[in-house]
Each structure stands twice: as structure tokens, then as C-alpha cells.
Image (cartoon, rainbow, N blue to C red):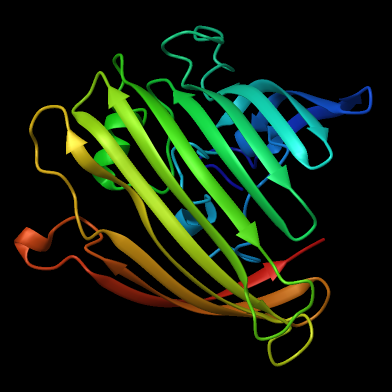
Length: 283
């Protein structure tokens, strides 16, 4: 990309090293690694191609916040069971911040999972320091946790997620679902919750094509520490069809509906409907 008024730049999204230890452990070290790269199990089969980001985070977007930065992790796997532990800090590349301090914007995560070829389930706990940029949350929740909040804000985030998919394509879809609950302190947010359900059919109309539907709520305030009004009726719904044109190119038309997107029911509305066509190239 080109920076306005500056030179052309090429950016590296992720850079990390992952290696086995013995037969059951895997370690990860990186100068730019994502939380999700250090989990032995991703407990969802939805979606094959992203439309609304909030519906791709296993129903627990604060726990699965995909924090990105310097980090390290270790997981163990045996006979379907897995235990993952990792730490990543968005601001650690800044020499004045480093790791494990209140300005690191760090996420510490532990996940316990069990998975087979066509199903899996996982429980996760994440501890978020102030400044973690959380996806899949309402603007109020984001304002209390994201970089602008600062201060001594911390969040304990819990999630339970799972999926099942049929052995063969047919009328029965894969089913992915998850729920998250979080407790924050040091800010005006008390408790927040979230959930999602995603259905996906394979080989629809033609081999390689997929159809999907997702429904859920972003992390919304279900209680506050300062008596401010809580949030209600905030949810998202999407439908999409992925047309696999070639092995490397797919076209995905989609429609989505956001109910009370800005938590503005009292002000008379806030719902949105939209559509898009997404083209994906894979190399």
C-alpha cells in the first residue's frame, strides 16, 4: 500500500515460528503472531468465507479476540483432547511498553478442547489488559476496553463453543454455536455477553459451492458498574452463497441485517440492512 505523502510500503501481517516438542506438544514464538494461531482447536466450522466478522468468533468475541503482536504459546494434544496456553501483547513491539505491564495491551488465554474429525467443543478463558482492540462488540463495550479507554481497565472473558458437521454433503448443514460472558473492572462496563449460531451447507447446486446463514449478538452490556443503561436487542443476521469459480477464485453474494446496531431503539431505530458481493483470491 502507499502511505499518503510518503514512500510505497509493504507490510508483514504475521511472522512467527511454530515447532513440535516431543510427540504431543507444539510451541509458538513470534514477533507478530495472533492469539488464534496458538490455539490447538478452533471450535467452529462456520463460515467458509467471512461476511460479518462478529459471526466468525465462536460466539465469544472477547475471549477469542485475535489479539495480534509479539507473543508465545504452548499447546498439548492427545487422543482428541487439547490444552492451549498463550500470551500476546499488541503494544509489546514498542520498546517503552514491552511485555506484561499495564500498557502492553496483552491477552492471556487458556483453552481446553476436545475434537474429532467432524465435531469439537472447547472452553476458553482470556484475561484482557486495558487497550486490547476487541472485535465483535458494541461501540460501548469497545469504548471501555479498546485503546481509547486506557487506565486500569481489565476484563475476564469466558466462552463455550462447539461445532458438528455431517460426514457427507447433503440437506443437513454443519452447525456451529457459541456463548461468551465477560466481567470487566476499572471502567463503566460491568458484565457483557454474546452468542452466535451458524449453519453451512456444502456442495449446494454444484460441487464446491456453499450456502450459509449466521445469527448472533456481539458482546453487549448486560450490566454496568456506574448504573448506566444496559444494551438490548443488538443482533446480527447474515445469509450468503459462495460460488467457487475456480480452485483459486470464489464469488460470494451476501445480505445482512443489523438490529439496533447503535443501541438506539429509544431514539427511534438504528437497524440496518445491506448487501455485498465478495471476491476471494487464494494463492
